[in-house]
Every structure is written in structure tokens, then in C-alpha cells.
Length: 414
Image 1 (cartoon, helix red, strand yellow):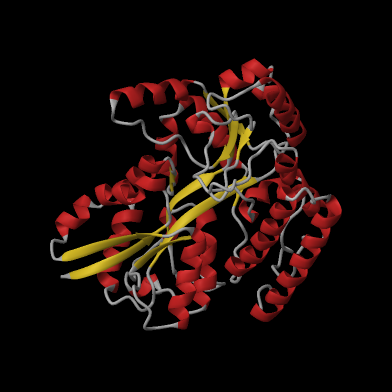
Image 2: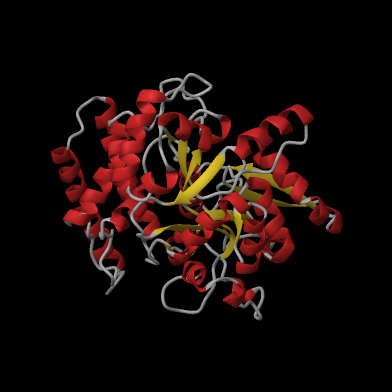
């Protein structure tokens, strides 16, 4: 029996594989002679494994379909790792997806398509109404900008304690409980800064506005308001399980559990949920897309494209997004999904109106890794009690120089 290998990110935590198997049951019934192997990789391991495939054509196992953050598309397409999807479907039309998502499906200025959107996220600030009431925080008047968020964190740290005994006002949205480029992006944009020049030719990390945006986000961890990963290595806790009062997130609440007791508890927790747009005084927030791509050396390209269509197109894509609390990648699907959350709909629609994606730069995946290594070093400085604005500025200057060198080699923006 031929077997397709699907590599995905941990979209649904420990339930990623069961959710995928349930979602793909109709596809498996329609293709009885085709096996399906599902592998879950973290972003870090996915990046490493894909580069290993480039370096060693004989490396096993090899995927037939992979999930990647959309801004990795250009990097891996230019390295020759990804199949050009128009060769498998000459009628492929990107107009079914919003214009903002289309550049991340291509590599450079050409029209060739190398990945397709699967589901999206747009960052908002969630809060628990009961926790904010106890601390005397008004979400409308106090959570409109970053200074208001700081004030709310001070009050929550002093007056609120979670049901688990934890006292962090804000959950860390990073699955590694670290800090990444995607975490700080809305803060940088809210300050009027950016990561790269508009033509993609050089870094702007040394600019004061960009630096101030990074400092804003780091204030959450330097002041003890947002947790960093502890030595236990346990999975991070968050607002949705009662361990924080606020959380920045790009997703809707996940579907309610089937078991009666768990379902009632989840319903009670959801009644206390509210959301406001990202608190950067009306600045841009982050729109992300998770895409699907077929490796260029897949031995089953037609079957892989059939699986891609099953996952990414129409009703199937929307139902999977609902299962993991994500937004469907089409405008119609997003509209229908938000209608099911009237208490959250306004915040998400407002955020979608002012959302932007990370820039479409061919080497962006590599540049992101440089920035995230810098963030990891700064996080270690925070843990060691050594992080101050001088050390942060030096680290960003060094990162900017490395980014400029990579851009000069890659020809981006030339």
C-alpha cells in the first residue's frame, strides 16, 4: 500500500494527531488504497528537518505534504524544496483567498505558487471579566494602549490570584514561553517602527521606534507579569485553563468538550471571556497564515495535492479551523466563524481591519531565526537578572548587522 506522509505543527496540542485523523476520515474512505502517516513537529524541529532533507536526498522519512508558517514559503521555494503547485493544477486560482495572503503563497515577483493557506490567526487581547472586575480594571478604558496594559498588570499582580494559585496577569502566548519576532511585531508597529526597510534591503532594528517596541513587550517579562518557561519543562498554562487573567492570542476559543462535566466547566469559563483589539493605540496587529506545501521530491505528488485540496479548500478547511480554534483562511469562512462568538466578534473584526502580515521577503524564514535567537539570548538575560536597555540595544544592533549581511547575500530588495 502506498502511504502519504503528512507533517504538521502541533495545531491542537496533544490532540493534534487524533484531531487530524478524525478530520481526514472521509479522505481515507475515498482513497482506500492509500495509507496516511501523520507526524507532528514543532516549528523548531520542522525547520531543522526540512533543511536536513535539502542536505541529504536519502534522508528518511520524507514528507509528501508539510505545514509551514506562510512566510517560510519564499525561503524554501528559492532553495528548491517545494513543488510548484500550478504544475499539478493549471487552473489554480489564488483569488479565492484574501489579497493579504497571496504574496506568501509565491516566491518573489513571479506568479508561481508554492503553498496554499490552510488557516489564519489575528492577534487580539483576551481577558477574564471576573479577574478584571476584582482588580478594578475596565477593559474598554484601560486596555486601549500599552501603557494601559501596564497599569492593568500592576493592579492584577497586586489584587488578583488565579484559581491555580498562579499570579501572572498575562499568559505567555509563545508555546516555548519565550519571545519571538511574531510576539513583538505588533508592539514594534504600534511604535511606528518596523523590522525591514520598505524595499526589503536592510534591517531597521537599530531605529529608536523599533527598539522601543521590543522594550515594550519585554517589560511584561522583566516586571514578572508574563511567565517564562520554568525548569520543569511543563506545557505552558494559559487564560483558557484559568491560569492567567489576560492573554494575547490569534485564535478563537476551541470547541467545547463532549463530556458533560468538562463541557459545563468550559461553558462557565467562556461566559467570563472578553476581548479587545491589540493594545497599541490603534496600530497594526499581526495576521498570520499557516500554509500547506508539497516537497519537490514527493513520490506521490498527485495524491499529495488531493490531500492538500481536502485540507485547505472550502468546507473542509473551515471545519478543521473550527476544531482547533483558528480562523478559516477565506473571508466567507472567517465571517461565518466569528458569528458564532458574538462577545468576541467586534474585537476580531476590528483587528482584521488593521492587521498586516510579515513582509514577503524571500529569505524571511532565515531572518526570523536570527531575530528569535537574539530574543532567546535576551530572555536568558532576564532569567539571570541582567537584562537592561543597554544590553537589549546592543543585541538588536548585532542582530541587525547579521540580517543586513544575509540580505546582501540573498539579493532581497535589490
